[in-house]
Image (tube, rainbow, N blue to C red; front, side, top):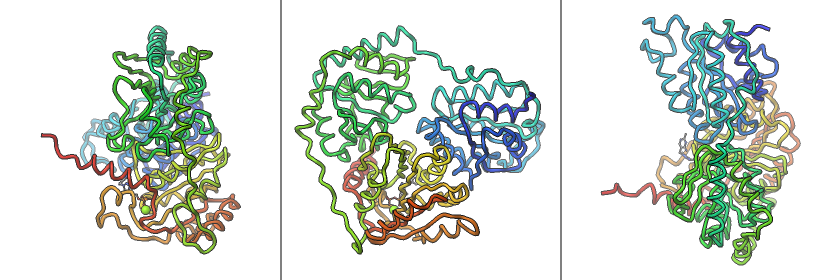
Length: 563
Ligand code: TPU
Ligand code: MG
């Protein structure tokens, strides 16, 4: 079989497990899209714009391990690069593929459309270099295979996005056939000596402490270490909490699991127990201003061991070039059969008080945030994935208890409002067997609303809770002003506009508890498209966690310049 640059790329995408790639057409990528279409194992899925295309791929990578987005030069790619920055922040291998000027035009002095109007077209590659772990420009068919393989291999190893631009006259040019995919997929093992030394050092750290606790961070999935973390927790028997962005990365039914550690926004009892511990094993955490509540709860110092994806840091030691998974398994082996380090569990039982269930309404009672959160709770099955948008949705999702197998997807490091709509689309494409539920605020929805039409187009039964609280409530809690008020939309009504003549999406309004209960029944019945439930609540009806977290973040933002 003979290959072209485009069919080579398509084969590699299929071989790394992509059953789909996302695309927006443009003249710099049309021939490439034709070539990609020839591969029947990797279907082309279209988006309304390139920002959404990038986020759809980002959501697909969450479901499927990796993803690809294909866009046109500059006008497309520069929008998609925002989502690629997001994929970098969120540790997801998304391959951005951009059509590019004809190879004869590079260095020719020609001015081309869709460019900034200068004759140097390298600016896009240079920007992409900053936002990806590997960025390549293909201007000769001969070099294409190694450049494509390099970009894909690096993305998969580092769990970061990569960038491939292909001159528009090269996609259909013949090139070498792909070699075995193992050359792209195989990852180098940990350095054995360093791994042994790290296991010894971390074991000694744990042994010298009486009251250790495990804190699970959001890079744990990228490190492929979720199961290994459970094994370590089994062996140690100490409490385990997840950081907010790592919600669902540790089974919530596990006997050692206590909830979310997030300062004042923690699950009740969790902050208390973490203050009581004498040491923390932080597994692949991201400590940023949001996750530390404006630096007020930042686990650090000699009693904190940070075990990250490829590096372990503890007091006086640094171990590089080891896989977290192997380290955790080594530690689990070491502690198996030894007396449990479970004093934190006993203490937790002492400080823990049963959660009070919030009062919810029925029938004609005016809809409240608590009603929505309880309704979300009632829908979570082991095969459910909830995507929670920036806003009070974060805190509502955090309150939701997850049965084994249920997943939560958040974009807390990048925090781009509007991420969740295309990401939910991409996720549902990647995991059609799961129940995908999206919780999104009105302000966020206005950025990327049109991607709901792609859920309609592909008949994806995503359930959308659109929280209409007439504005940017999360911003109100950080710092209020007129800029936090938004133009109201008929959110439920736009679904019929998206349906046009053939769509099966449903838009419903819930102003009372009874209307929400009825709407959910309709949503569960609708298998032929998304159901958007516009939930109208008071502007200030938000979680207490948002209020206290917002106050801490505002304090951090307003620190005066150091003298
Ligand atoms: O539940 P609620 O009302 O807090 O959520 P909603 O309505 O979605 O409001 C979100 C408000 C918000 C803004 C405006 N959260 N963060 N921002 C700042 C922001 C602006 N632009 C982008 C792309 N991302 C952001 N996070
Ligand atoms: Mg809002």
